[in-house]
Each structure stands twice: as C-alpha cells, then as structure tokens.
Image (tube, rainbow, N blue to C red; front, top):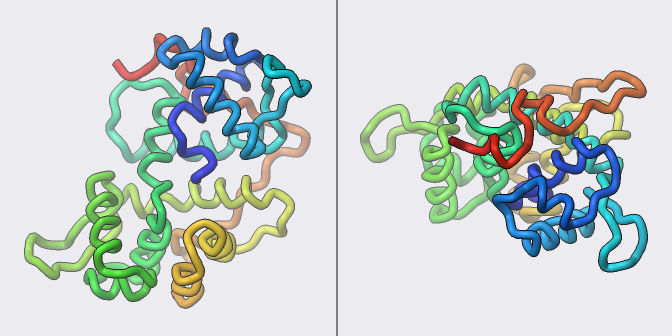
Length: 255
C-alpha cells in the first residue's frame, strides 16, 4: 500500500496507462493540469525508484512508461474502486480520485494489523486489540480513531470500554487485500493472504506486529483467507478508468 499511497501516484499511473507508451514529464503534466509539472516530475521519479515506471534512457528528459509491475496495478485499482463504489458515499468523482481515497484509508502503518485482529476476533475491547496487534495503547488509540473516521471500524456502544467491531466496509476488504497480495507476489503459489500480510508487515512495520499477526487465529472465511484471483492468461487489463468508469482527466475530478 505504501508504494501507491503518495498523492497523484494513481493519477500518474492511469495517465501512462491511457497513453499506452512513453510520456515525458511535461506531457503527463498536461493531462493533469491540477498538478504542477515540477510535482509530476517528483512523483514520477519516486515511482521510478519504486519500480512502478521505467525510463527510455538516462537523460533528464527521458520519457517514462509503466513497468510490468506498474501495469499490473490494474487489478489493485479495480479492487479498490469496486470496494469504494460498494461501501463509500463519495458522490461523483474520477476513477483515480476514488482509488486514491480508498488507499488513503488503508495505507497507514499498522492499520492492517488492527483490521486483521478485529476480523479474527470479532467484537473486541481496546486493551485486547492492542495486545493482539502488538501495539502500545497510545498508538492503538490513534489508529482506532482514524479507522473510525474512515468508516472501517465502529464501537458497539457510547460508553468508555465498549468493544470495537469492523463496519460492513471493513469486513468487505477481502478482495482488496487479495488483489494487493497477488500484485505483490505474482509468481507465488496462491495461499491464504495472511502469510503475505505478515511478511509485508515484517518488512514495513516491524517484527513486533508481524509476530502478533502470526499469533492471530483466522477463521476459514475471514477477511485474510481469500486466495488471489487468477488473471486471464495473456490479458493485461488497462489501469485507467476501466476500474471506475470515469476517465482520469482533469475535468473528472471531484465536483
């Protein structure tokens, strides 16, 4: 999630996908008139460092195009867009804007750990969430507040100490995590997504949370047990607005 979370990453990726070939920074910026050319250049440079795009040469003005890794983001964008359409009330927004809004709700450090603990344990009190996720109380409180604001977690009552549960939107995240897992590990034999989540957490958020994830007992039909869905052989669906049905153009942003 951290690779695609920075603002305008999805817009840039979908613009390159629509073009279907190399584009210079200024040409991408023309397609995104609400972003400065300088910022587009910085975002593409970061995407290059992250392996999402490649460059046709070493010159400063060399054009960018999606790498295989970046092009495969189409399945992740589609899963995020489908989830957003089904569970979030955003009104009429561009497809890229909808995807970026969804990623914003999910990418923060240890959000996945908290969501997984609630998915495995159902209704849980604050202290048990912190213990199972391997987080200190202060950080757990911050993360739960943010997840509530983002519509993924709610409390079962108004009193201090009332348990927390996942909302319908939170419980429906299985296909999103499956798509991210498949994108992150495309050649790995399909397996419960829990293993991949724990591995990713070990890399990006620390050994303590990874250990907590490994301790969690996940029910067979839980959020993190969805196997990645196979993609049709030889078909690479476009990253651009097919995921949401709205072109990734400047005129299609939130109105």
